[in-house]
Length: 167
Image (cartoon, rainbow, N blue to C red; front, side, top):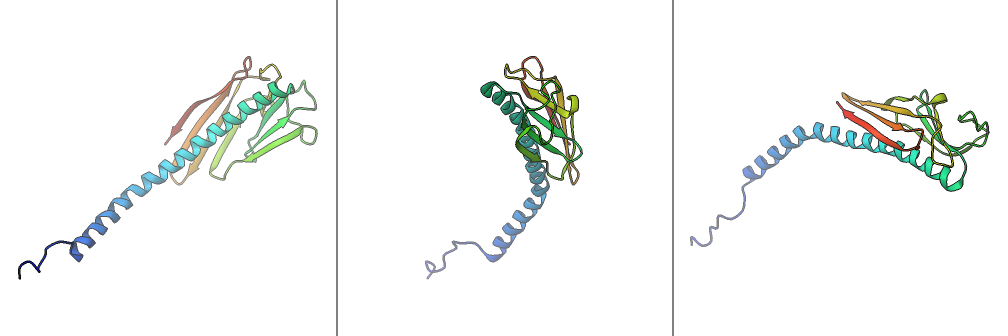
């Protein structure tokens, strides 16, 4: 008779206690998880900007024509273009230059600023850039603030991420 009363399995009380513990741990981890996701997205966007700068330089070298990137700080738009008009000015001329692509930053990006003349950097067929400068980017969502900068060196045209900081 004792063989029929097996003590294997879990009780309903044990199951409910386990579910409550998992719920508490999940609620503690959720804000940290959200912060991590936003940090990863921000780092990705910063790296996308540097990648676009490198693509513009590569296109200029490959196609032997000036290519550039324009940063519109008011509308938070980044434009990739082939410089066909006013080549000596190193600027983006709407309607005259050939637009390759446009990227609009999401609303949580509260600040975009480039230190280049006319907010544009143009890469020459030899790989050099029109000027050295920095691109600054800040995003804010809830209480999470992310800042970063990228740079371009005029003599070589090389670009890189300078720093990324998350608060």
